[in-house]
Image (cartoon, rainbow, N blue to C red; front, side, top):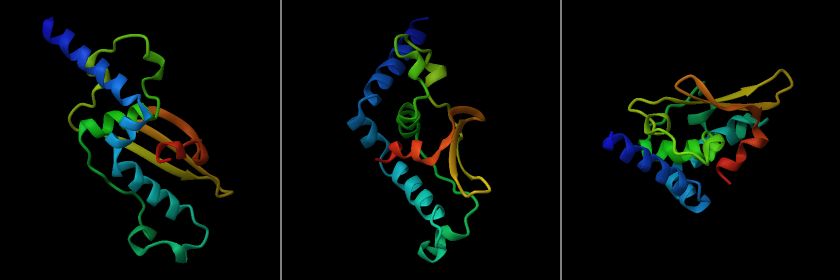
Length: 137
């Protein structure tokens, strides 16, 4: 019982900490910048501007620690409906092997959209890419 209370407090403190824009950006670090680079290049109409290492990619894989994934999920608003309550550690903290899928999609008019999943559960709903750029600005 004591262990659970301590872990819940840890989750609560990290959520409060990462809700600070400056701390959140520092914690996410190059992760968001790498995503931005891929999105910028894959959104270009003129593919001659796209570096060869990105041009033919259908997907990219990044690896990150839990203390990078958590502020990224906070920035996406994954816990915004729970600000007033202390969340259970297991519902907040990214467990070992967590997969964050960032889907960059285009429709037949070449409008770009983004959706983010955590272990196949949507944490950032499908939205126009312009509504996602806040993550690296």
